[in-house]
Structures are given as C-alpha cells and as structure tokens.
Amino acid sequence: MRKLALIIGLMVAGNILFAQEEKEQKEKPPVKIEEYKERLKLTESQIAELKKLRESMKPELEAIRKDESKSRSERMQARTDVMKKQEERVAEILDDKQEAELKEIHREIRDNVRERRQRKRERRKG
Image (cartoon, helix red, strand yellow):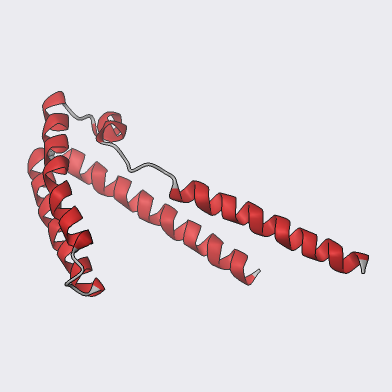
C-alpha cells in the first residue's frame, strides 16, 4: 500500500513539474529585432526599417489567423505566403553577410525546437 501511495505521489509530482516546464516554454516572448542587433551588426536605419516591416505585416497575419472561413491548411498557406514576402523584404534591407547570419540564427532556432520536441517525445515514452 505504501509503495502504491509513493508511486502515485511521484507521478503527481512529475506531472506538476512537467506542466510547469511546458508553461515556461510557452511564455517565452517573441524574438525582438533588438536581440539580433549586435549579432547581425544592424545599423539604426536597418532596425527602423525592420520594425516598420514587422508592424506592417502584423495586421495581415492577424487577419489570416482570425479568418474562420478558410480551412487550417489554407490559413497556413496564406501565412506562409506572407512570411515569404516578409523574407524578400528583409533581404532587401540586409546585406549579404547579415542575411547569411540571419539564416544561421534561424537554423539554430529550428535545431533548438527539434531538440526540445525530441526530449518531449522521449519523456512521454519514458
């Protein structure tokens, strides 16, 4: 009986810790342009242009997100199209070195996300 109570207690504690960890991951704020400033060696005018671009894209992305008339896959495709336009505009703002560094940053972020997902899958199996 004690073993059963101990096992149940450990399971509950594990679930609580796991839930808190997931909550912390979800609460991360979106990346801000200022965080890239040093690594990309952005000029003040580039920062201003990038902020202006981001602000101009927000309403379009929000409209896509709220559009209930389209299927999920249609909304995802529309969002992808908007993001491609944004990437093209960013390429016009950055020089070649900065663009290459930005791609490296994005690769690091993707790798990090993949690692977190893999750890999550392993914990579920575990």
